[in-house]
Image (cartoon, rainbow, N blue to C red; front, side, top):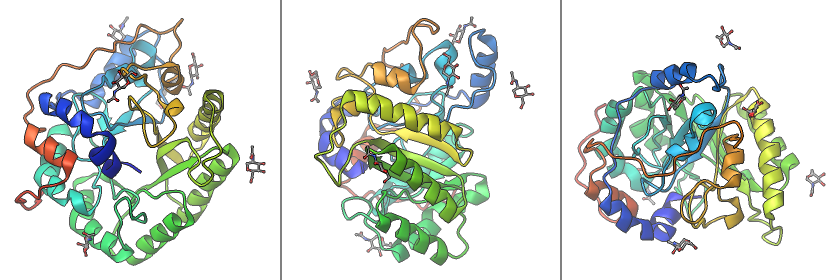
Length: 338
Ligand SMILES: *[C@@H]1O[C@H](CO)[C@@H](O)[C@H](O)[C@H]1NC(C)=O
Ligand SMILES: *[C@@H]1O[C@H](CO)[C@@H](O)[C@H](O)[C@H]1NC(C)=O
Ligand SMILES: *[C@@H]1O[C@H](CO)[C@@H](O)[C@H](O)[C@H]1NC(C)=O
Ligand SMILES: *[C@@H]1O[C@H](CO)[C@@H](O)[C@H](O)[C@H]1NC(C)=O
Ligand SMILES: *[C@@H]1O[C@H](CO)[C@@H](O)[C@H](O)[C@H]1NC(C)=O
Ligand SMILES: *[C@@H]1O[C@H](CO)[C@@H](O)[C@H](O)[C@H]1NC(C)=O
């Protein structure tokens, strides 16, 4: 799922807001988090949370509220935006090379994003659902070519590389198997995959099958209680609460799973049933969101929901955000030489 639909559909309304907001960068780094963690009596000493945020909101919503304060500061470890555009935040950012149509974005901004954000960037994600016509829509040989041109070279610079992220269809798995066997000289450090459905057992089997097949750490970069194959299977809010809880317990406990990101960090959630939302329509974290970050009112400090303040990084300039959002204009690309 995502960017195309987000950027061209549901998110067109956000564009205006994005135009009004500069995306900035803070030069804090991961060690700051660790220091803060030690300073907090209520903070767990060795945090093992794998939770991340699939974040299509740009800066229109506070991401900081999902980091929470105090104990929950470390519950959300990273976020990605299906793009090279980070937002003003001090947790790890994971850029994505989305696919063909993000080539100009990549050549224009990836190098600078990496330069500005590292060490808050340690990994990069490959193409988004390349096997789906509605998403990156690539034949395997096209995917291999793009990977070699834009992704593989980052490994020599120390970034870990996440495979193209597949949907949970059998075509997705077959695409990735082909990709891995035909991408000579390519290195995939971890496998990125998506899963939508309602049955926890099937989800677990799918994840285990991916590990058995690929023998690499997994990042489940999109998942939610939503059955696209049998749309009559609607998850009630209670189903979603149970589903998230069961899967999060499983994913947290599975040694071969490194990270995961629930699909639902979006106000006025579209693409999946709105009950999957981890924020309300005003962009404020809701009870499901608190469950996701393991926030407990009685233990934790209040969550600050105000929008972040912006530093003038200049990186996410207004035109580039707009171009990314609309994907309509091809920029004159400077060659990525990072
Ligand atoms: C946290 O991890 C460090 C390094 O692995 C270890 O030395 C320390 O004992 C751990 N602390 C707790 C409370 O588990
Ligand atoms: C706990 O951490 C938060 C955010 O990291 C910080 O604002 C707060 O001052 C810390 N509390 C203590 C008691 O150190
Ligand atoms: C995607 O990129 C590949 C490799 O550059 C190219 O062969 C293909 O025509 C492109 N497909 C689309 C739909 O733009
Ligand atoms: C979930 O899938 C498993 C395995 O196919 C099946 O045995 C079980 O009945 C399913 N659960 C529900 C609630 O459909
Ligand atoms: C989102 O939901 C809120 C509350 O229902 C509503 O006021 C707002 O107009 C909605 N925004 C969009 C972009 O649909
Ligand atoms: C969630 O928080 C509770 C304390 O409120 C803690 O015991 C538990 O280990 C936490 N779960 C995870 C997965 O971090």
